[in-house]
Image (cartoon, rainbow, N blue to C red):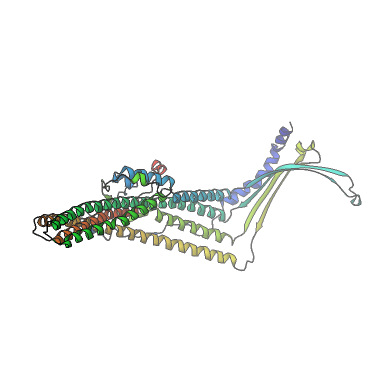
Length: 489
């Protein structure tokens, strides 16, 4: 019953009208409010209509306006690579850090949004006081009150609106930062995986060469025992064998380091991927080419560019926040409650009480601190603009470099394949002639050594073509779409 009496006390129509009238006047004032500071406008960007290296674009590349595949590794048709990539996206520590930063930015945005609204609190108290006899108030008095207090910082000049704009832009920058971390991660995982497969192949080539050198040694030893050649041929065979054998430990060490880096990228301890990668596999061959597109596509493809643009928007809004400090601030405080000298009287109509106050404030002298704060905000805006323009130039250079490296490495690989075929033929011919006594053993060793060198260079070039392709995908902004992004697209 007491609660019902309290509610009915607040339900009195005349009380509501007296409280609503100043709020209506306030609403009119707020509709006329303005946000000081510059309104953000995205910078007008002029990009070249085509790539400088457009002449390098061959049949495996396309200058269509389609975006490059976001999940570029799916075109490699390598189940191990795909499984490693999926795990890396889920468990990589850099991804987790970027996600935590995004949650922080979202919380700051929510705080900025809530800062524009009134703060309402409830309070109640009960006290008993006995006055001094000297004051003539020597009796004991009880006092009870309960009610609500509200405080609202009126955003007349848009300081909180600008703060919300800055927080929203920072949140969007955080989303792009997460995507940029994914672009970097997927590229690093792909490059390390491909290099690991290449090192496995180079170790296999060296091992196969050891078997061939051992056969050459046996032939040289047999011919020496038959008195057909001197000890020189046998010693040369042993030296060539040991020289080739000495290359394998460094390749194995490189493979070990590569697999450990890959494990760290997956958020795992070093050594955890050795079993998975133990099965030897050929280097993957991408099933389709790359849609290079045009330079303007980078604005929508590359998350680092979009992040820089959002940082510029946030910095612009912060100029408005700093500018608003030059203007008066207005705080509206109000209370609505009940007061009585007894608990019985607390829930009567006569116990109602309310108060409403508007408190303006203006800084008259601050030794130039507000102006200096505006100058600092404007300088940060200029920094953000320079960073955005720099990100554009870097993106263009990344694509040009990756495009040039990829196409030219493919041409190098074609030359190495032709050289390998010729060197293999020369090695077989030298071996046959030596067995027939028509050539000396040095010709066989030279041909064998040249063949090993060419085969090793070919293996290095094969992985370079693929890693350059991965870098091209990265430069184009591929590799950042997550499951939730795909659902929203």
